[in-house]
Length: 367
Image (cartoon, rainbow, N blue to C red; front, side):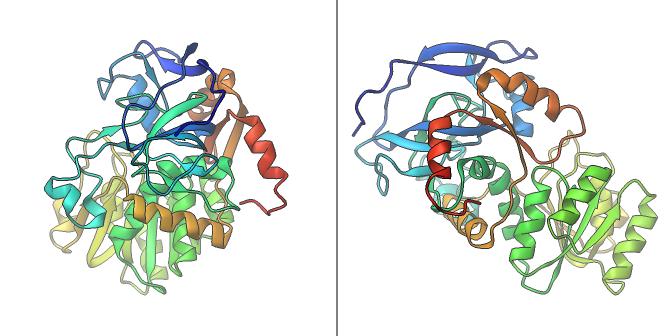
């Protein structure tokens, strides 16, 4: 099913050469090729750390490639087997595209179903959200709550699903303590708010003044400056946890010492969820062998978990810190801000200004 009067051409920001800026090009509007696909008119797309990995060639993506795997928009067409959606629905675009559905991962517990070896990824291996229209797998998309804006939703497609998946793997309960290393970044500021909404006590660890301030604004109970000596960081965490350490720690920081610090501030027999993706994760053996610390790698979360996340964001009015840029032609400015080291939250590219204006006219108090 398709809506009428779709244009033949659209603007898109493409990676055409590795280690070079995006090119803003006019390309054909994509057509539905699979019965499970949605064609989404992108309202907002945001920039992610992974986009830099794509543009540098780490994933060996086939070029040209439309960037971004963080998008939100409106369904304008759908395949015959795209269940639960109709034209006009506001959706969060899923990163994953076409899992096989039959392998042990796809058939396993919900939290491992996004590890299918045969799946593709939007904005990484095929065209993503830096365009006026994009193709999305309906089985990985989520409907947006009525009061959740496109601008707040877009970063949740990857950043939100990533940190939510980490919290799910930490398996904590209300009243327990979670430490978040890298708490004031794009993922971290969401993690602080998610954790508080779940009833957790949050220890925010970061190494930038702006990041610590953002973590405070998001509700962190304790702030710890990671620029201190590691022993001092550990001492401060132990002091506020009665000498035990955090019940679990999420490590979002790429710094070479971050994983070791994460292990040292976590209580014995507990878990560090490693979300950051440095070239190597280095931990002195005594930090985890002697104290029986478990490291759990975590990438994303399932579409089902993502829907729970969206409902939590809408219910609790969780604020997604964004830095808006008007249109794809301002993408270069967004990239510059992201690389400046001074950014709070996420850069968001406003693409469908008409849809964004309609949200403001809805009468709802938008998150």
